[in-house]
Image (tube, rainbow, N blue to C red; front, side, top):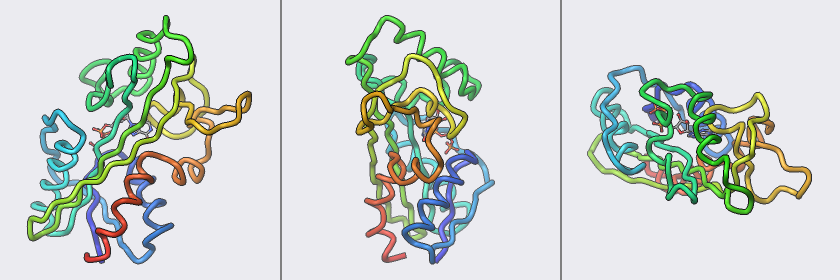
Length: 197
Ligand code: ITT
């Protein structure tokens, strides 16, 4: 079976292809370069559905879309759905994570807790819709580290690492991230729904 992945973010495409290949190697994930709808939802699920519906309508294929972001507890869950544009209208990862670090400059551990969130929507040609969610808990580092990943990865310290040996996701390999991430966790919930494609 084929699905179209309704994202214009090349990092997400790469991560999805690795995550899907590990679990459903028979599933062919094709890219989407059709029109980008306006993401004006106020929840991850609403925005994921907006993107998946547009790609399903445009291609006639079952469509997957991910809407994701980082939710910082001490900021009441912000940047959340506004993660891609936190520092302005331009998608600038460095500006976004620097602004977030500035906003948390007075906040020390253990109050720097945050979660990455991914909601994946599946929209089928017959109009049937599902959403699944994955969360990845951790803390924000005081400064960025590591060349890997994208977005807020260089400042995210996932839970479960040995004290003194903690690395940001920017310092993790792609394989390590794809085994643990919010996107991988959401995808696990999606697997049973893909049986019937
Ligand atoms: P599409 O809408 O085309 O899928 P996008 O990058 O605009 O691409 P979102 O609207 O879902 O996607 O914004 C997600 C933002 O949240 C993204 O730009 C990053 O800043 C952040 N983010 C999401 N997942 C992340 C991850 O795995 N690592 C680091 N940052 C992430």
